[in-house]
Amino acid sequence: MENKQHQQLIKLANTKMPYGKYKGRFLIDLPEHYIVWYNSKGFPSGTFGDQLRLIYEIKLNGLEDLVRKLKET
Image (cartoon, rainbow, N blue to C red; front, top):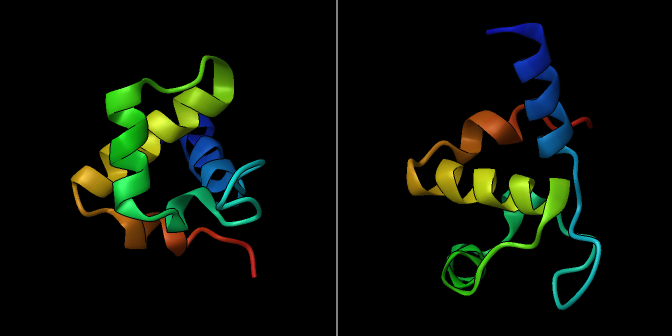
């Protein structure tokens, strides 16, 4: 894997929800129904929206555990 992509996945794995009901929860740990709701509503613009869109794709393909392994302990 390219180093830049690896760094982006590490950052994704360690990013927390900045607001709302799930504030403080890692994005990868957000409930699937919440991410699906965002997909139907529309993701926010910018980097955060890009991260949520990637989380949606990861969850859709059942790859959550690969991202969870990248979380800093």
